[in-house]
Image (cartoon, rainbow, N blue to C red; front, side, top):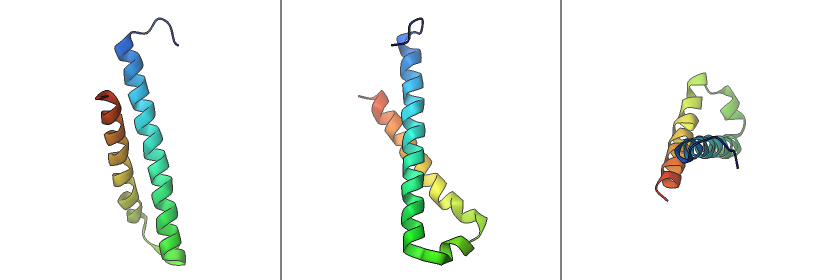
Length: 71
């Protein structure tokens, strides 16, 4: 346990870590699924298609952090 930090500050950092971790895991999972489903076509898509993966990943991270906060 980190000393010298208030309880709310520790929770804030934990929420950030949970949200960031879930975002990364969901992004990697979605990337793997899309890559497996589309094969070589995925590599030739435009750069804007990355946002189609980032938005749900960030939404999942925010949702997970909010669930942690409300526990």
